Image (cartoon, rainbow, N blue to C red; front, top):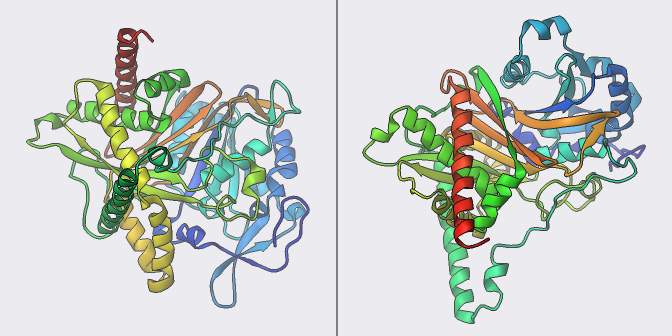
Amino acid sequence: MVVVGDGIYDGREAVTPMGSFFLHPTLQQLVNGVFGFKNPIDVDALKAQLRTSILRHPRFCSVLAKNGDGSDCWRRIRPEEVDLDRHVVVVSEEEELAGGEDFVNKYVGSLTIDTSLDMKRPLWEVHVLRSNRCCVFRVHHVLGDCTSFLALFLDSCQRVDDVSLPPSIPSLRKTPATSSLTKNASLFQRLLLFLSFVWYTIVYCTLLVLHSFWIRDDPSPITGGAGVELWPRMVRTLTIKLSDMKLVKTTFNGTINDVLLGIISLGLERYLELKNISKLNKPLRVTGLVITNLRPTSGLQSLESLMKSDSRVGWGNKFGVMLLPFYLGKRLADPIQHLRKLKEMTCAKKLSLEAIFSLKGYTFVKAVLGGKIAAKMNYNIISNTTFSVSNIMGPLDEMMFAGNPITYIRPTSTGLPQAMFVHMVSYMDKADIHIQVVKNIIPDPDVLVKCFEDALHSMKSSAMQINKKEGV
């Protein structure tokens, strides 16, 4: 049993099946969270804060070990035994200055193809870039998912306006896709809804399985594939106003996630038009791997809720994936109409059990056929699709870590066998869309970012025109 704080540990704790997924050689994943700060970074104060906060969590003072049967497990060590000098990497300021204005992007880009961590120590590091006033928290994915890590980090922070108050987290309890539809529905309508649920689940889960074998996206200038995870990468960030996304989502009664997917799909279409792909005889199928939080409460969680014994809520890798195909080349003239079509597809996805199946299916295959086959099937799903996307709604308040106000939060991860990975985290009144691309496939990421920005502007303009006509 493991508890937060000075708790107890009786023996070794097995690594979860989903955690072991990230220990397979072809699927090693590290989360790289970039945190910007308002003031110069005091390294000693940073270490002191890590000692009194991050190390309270058992995963951050545990090392990987093997049980007698060869399975992976966690071996707890005392927090005072963790040598922070070996976990905090201070980059020389001379190196930063020599790297120029784009040093942070170059540095983070180099980390996205580096999965090396000393397996004899707890699997995390903090890289300090003092000249650029930011830190890169590197955490192995076997420890948990981005929701878990961000909750732990924010639990170690304080609000700038009132240190006695916890952060305001936009966390909403999920409403099953069927609940709003069954309310006041007739028996016949409920039957049709149930049949739709069964049909969508069968179709989408079957397509997920087929993607693990031979179904793949159409070849395009943004197609990745097996082995691409080792290619050099670049990162860029598009910072947008959260109010703009809310304006658009309200217009078509969607969600922030729908707007993000709309930005990506319309942006990719604009980008491919610049590559003269519009000359194709048929629409181009590009599939996104949408990472879905499977906890009953959506959005960012409090650390207290994550540490509860309820496995549906708790700490770890509690996520699944959904395949979302875009057919580029059949764009509607009105961006809001495009978003409405996109929402229809996401609603159908949410009505199915695809995301849950992606997690439970991996666990089943691993138990029956072994971890090697299960990892290969998941690797194929990733390499047969074009990009991945994740979205976390961050805190609404300005936060500070070790007494230093945080200016931005930008997560990314080590490379996948795809040409593009999009992460979005909101913080206060803004959202950072952090875009990671393979350098040799998408050599002009600034052009891609501009296409995403133009896509949002077109959606916002269309939303404002609709609201003006309707007198909103």
